[in-house]
Every structure is written in C-alpha cells, then in structure tokens.
Image 1 (cartoon, rainbow, N blue to C red):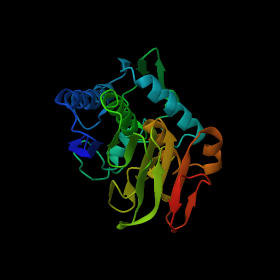
Image 2 (image 1 turned 90 degrees about the horizontal axis):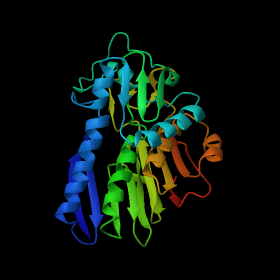
Image 3 (image 1 turned 90 degrees about the vertical axis):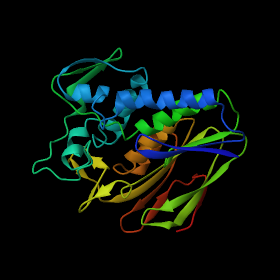
Length: 285
C-alpha cells in the first residue's frame, strides 16, 4: 500500500491506496480541502464563516450546506437542542478561539437557538452576528468529499482524518478503538466493511483547563462530563458517522438507534462501556 500523509484543517490526514495517487488527484484533493476550509473555518479571517460572524445578512452558502444543515436539524431535534452549529461564539469564549488562546472569558456567550437563523434555497439569513462551528459533522463531510474524488481514480483506498475514516475497497478493515485515557491501549476493534465510515470522538482530543473540551452541550453552553468517548459506524457517510458520534455524548442510545441506522460504542467517565448488539467487531472491556 502507498500512504499519502499530510496536514490539513488543523489535523493529520492519511490516504492509503494500492499505488501512489496521480499528481492531478492530489491536486484535486488539496483544492477540495482548501475550498471547504475557506468556506467553513472559524479559525481564519478570510472564511465565509468569519464574514457571517461580522454582521447580520443573507449569506449564499456552498452546495454542501443543504446536506449539512438538514442533518444538523435532525441532530438538534434528536438531542433536544444539545447539538447546535451556532456554538462557535461560546467555544471561542471558553478559550477555543481562532488564536487558540485557551483563556476563558468571564461571561461566555450563550448559544443562540438554532431557530434564530433561517436557511432556504442555499441562503442563510441571520438577524445578528453568529459564529458557526460545524465541527460536530463537518470533518466527516469533508472526508466524504475527499473520498468521492479518490474513488473516481482507484477502487481500493482508505481516507483517515484523525478519527474520521472512510474505507473503500474489497475487504474489511480492522481498526483499533483507542482508549481515551491511555493511547497505548485499545478498548476493542472494529471491522469496517467497504463503503463504511467510522468516526471516533473523545473529550480529551481538544481539552484545556479544568474540565474544558470541545464537546459542548448547546443547552448549557458547557462541556459535557458524562460520556468521554464515542465510536460510530455508518454505511456510506462519514458525515453521518461524525454527527452521530457527537450526538451519542448527549442522548440515550435507544433514541438514536430508533432514528438512525448505525452501530455505536460509548465510554463513560466512570469506565463503563456500552455498545450496540450488532457492532461490527469486538469490545474487550
């Protein structure tokens, strides 16, 4: 196998293929990531998200916003508002800002209700400045976009964006489920079938200060403290795996399983591990 490793959107990526990807494919992947980042990043001043944060108005969004916002509406509904892409200002005030200051504001901004913005026909209408953060599902969507480019050129590949993974090929792929408190250990393994996606999320991946991390409950504006790690497998969509991995921090698994076709593992702060009966793999603990 050939491995193409690179850094993008603040994290490590690796694309594994049988033969090295042609230069034009790598160029297309790089351009895809740059376009996505220029639209959706809250960490760069020249992004569309940064423009939206500067004032109310009507904002034409990229085509992928239809899938993304429809899915966010589903997640918002099934989590009773805990998942909300308007958490950007709150995250920034908690210290996870564009400069990574890690300094907490005296009064972090509350999260505006998802109903305070309107999205129709590709246009987002805001009545006040809002700072979007699509991290709950956005990286998975970008993996899907990159995978769609790669699969036009090769028939066996894996795209791994540090926890968001899409597997294309002819045979299952075994992936270790890293223990969130000890990277030298695994709590199990997953067998990912071709055209399946796996997303792993953990509160320790972007953590700072006392109890501060990036998994924010939009209802309270504070980091969650019950579940500390989740893993979700979904057929054909890393975006949905990513978003559901976030939702599993906040919602009873039975409610999520009833609404979305997926398999999951979740680990609690007290060490308990829960998983779906049909999870494709083995849990050690």
